[in-house]
Image 1 (cartoon, rainbow, N blue to C red):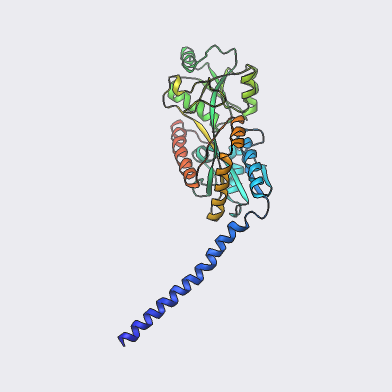
Image 2: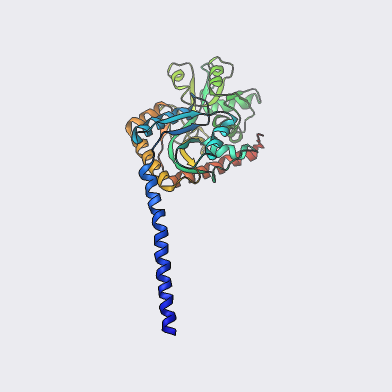
Length: 335
C-alpha cells in the first residue's frame, strides 16, 4: 500500500507539472506575440502641454524617430491644461497596450503629485516608465538693462531693496516657478514671483522689460540670447549647458549644490506588457544615442539622457521627493 500511494503521488506530481507547462506555454507564446506584432498600427504620443514648449519639442524628436524605427505613424497629441494634469491623466486611463504613450516631464510626474490636491492619479502606480530622453536646465534670464550681471549681484540687489525685485516665471508649479521658489528659499531674498500663463508671455514681458529677470527653460530664449536681446545669468544644472558654455552654473556662482533640472521621458499606462515596454525602451535608447538626435535635442535646449525603465522609475521617485519637500515647505496647494 505504501508503494502504491507513493506511485500515485509521483503520478499526481507529473500531471501537475505537465499541466503547469501546458498552462505556461500559451502565456509565453502570448508574450512573444506581443513583441512580434507590436506595433501593428499607429501610436499616439500625448504631450500634456500646448504646442511650442520644451515638452512638445522633445516629443516631436521622439515621435519622428520612433515612426522611422517601427515603420508606423507616431502622432503627437497636445492636450494641455491643468498644469499638465489633463493629458497625463488621459494616458494613465488609456488601454495598456503600448499604443498610447506619454512624454513625461518633471513637472507632471514629480511636482504635481504634491502640488495638486485632486490629481486623480499616482505617477508611481499608474505608469510603466520606458526611459529618459533628455534633461533641460532652467536659466535665470535677464533683460539687457538689468544692472546685476551675476547671481551674487542679483542677490545683493534683492537684499538691498527687499520685496522690490520682480521675477517672471511660467505658471505655479511648473519648473520655472519652482526654480524661482527654490532660489528665494536658498538665497534668503525677498522678491515677488510673477507667474504667467505660459512660457511665451514670460518671454514677451522679459523682452519688453516689463519684468527684469525670469526663470525659464532655454528653447524660447536661445535666439534672443544670441541676438543680445536677453542675457543668461546662470543655469540650474550641475554642468554648464552645451550651447551656452560661457554661462556659469548656480553652483559655480556662489550657491553650492543648487540644482533644478527638468527631465523628459517616455511612459506607458501601467499594465502595459513588459515585452512591449522593453521593446520601446530599447528603441528609445538607440534613438537617444543617435548623433543626429543628440544634435536636435541640444538645439532644442536640452542634453541627451538615456536610461532603462528601472532607472527612469528611480529618477521619478527621487525628483518627487525633492520637489515635494519644497512644496510642503512653502505650503503650496492647487485645487
